[in-house]
Amino acid sequence: MAAPRILSGIKPTGRPHLGNYFGMMRPGIEWQERGEAFYFIADYHALTTVHDPAALREYTRSVALDFLACGLDPKKAVLFRQSDVPEVTELAWLLTCLTPMPMLENCHAYKDHVAKGKVPSHGLFAYPVLMAADILLYNSNVVPVGRDQKQHVEVTRDLAEKANRVFGEVFTVPEASIVAEVATVVGLDGQKMSKSYNNTIGLFEEEKVLRKKVMSIVTDSAPVEAPKDPANSAIVALYRLCAEPDAVALMEDQFRAGGIGYGDFKKRLFEALWDRFAPFRAKRAELSADPATLDAILEDGARRARAVALPTMDRVRKAFGLK
Ligand code: ADP
Ligand code: TRP
Image (cartoon, rainbow, N blue to C red; front, side):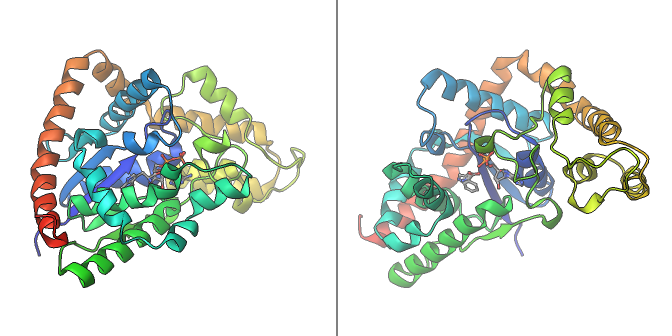
């Protein structure tokens, strides 16, 4: 079989956090060894929430730097800005015309918004269709994402299958790839870590901020001597992501044995996180001192992305009767 085409995106709505890293960036970086990987900064999607142009530009560059610092290799993977290939919005329109409203009414981002009593924009409602366009434009086989995006990949599959029934074999039907152990990384409060819940640990926090955040992880009020349950602890869950298996086993044993307070475990977690991301911090400092290199990487990425997108659009326009 030919090398798979891999594609994923991340919204530039703030600085990436541990959930983004373990759920999507790290699996994406691993996939770059196994096929043709395309990763983009989803600035069109970010416009559903970010309405400050300077902030959008700044987040877009900063997320690209973060991804590169964590190991994305621009010689192997294609890194680009979503809006550098505006044809994706045309494809989104074509797909919109095949999308039943109830399918979108059922999507969680929109449902959560309505449940909170807020009025969603049409952009938020149509968000999964633009995401389907992202995936289908690049003939993607595999989409590495965290569990919260599974539903959107299902929508993409449904739309691709429908288009293929109606217009002939126009689209590749993709599959989500979700790493089970990190499908949902927990945040400081024990819920899913998310920018919208204000419970994140950023990948590149300053030392003091990181320490403060780790010390603020919510625990029960068990006293030092009491045995503690490692299964329900955000401290242990996060430690598992960044420490060696032996160190994790030791922490779990010490939780069960009692005699050590949560504060000490948190200090250990802080050290592990700080060390785990040290090489990435060094790489990021180096990259951010050289903005021209980032410009060149994004330009090259846009060129390579267009080389796939334009022929797809030709094929799709013909199939839909526009040519
Ligand atoms: P956020 O929810 O913080 O706004 P994004 O929607 O930008 O994050 O998510 C970018 C990628 O990171 C997606 O693939 C998403 O599934 C993944 N991701 C986000 N939060 C988590 C988490 N807590 N655990 C695992 N993966 C996550
Ligand atoms: N919706 C994704 C998120 O919120 C980001 C995204 C946009 C994406 N387009 C995509 C992910 C295409 C995978 C494939 O995280």
